[in-house]
Image (cartoon, rainbow, N blue to C red; front, side, top):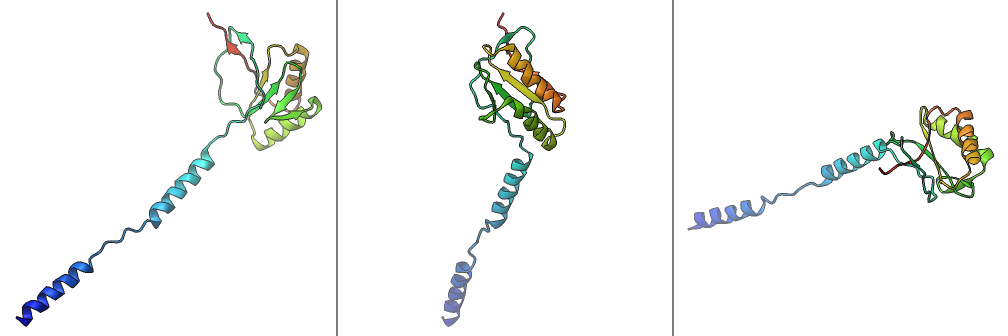
Length: 143
């Protein structure tokens, strides 16, 4: 009878000691690595920061992703990243952007009420800064 008690007692001790622990550290490490990967490879869209009513154009087409967006309001004010910029400073802003993003494009979002002279002045400053890919935003004309 002593033998059976010993076996029973040993069996219970064996059953109690076989608890399984799940190590979450490698899973958490993998999630952080994936998060960092997606943050590094993501391209962030810059906005001009002002509400623009774009003019309609029959030849308007969807373009590639553009890096720098410049907004021109109906009163002729210029905005980059929700910050007002003077016309004399547009060239330096575009130059700095092109230094950080070689080959990057510039999109000018001019309101339909904006004067053509102001739009051409902004376009000229972008080209003088060395931007080769400069476009003016428009909405496709409805048939």
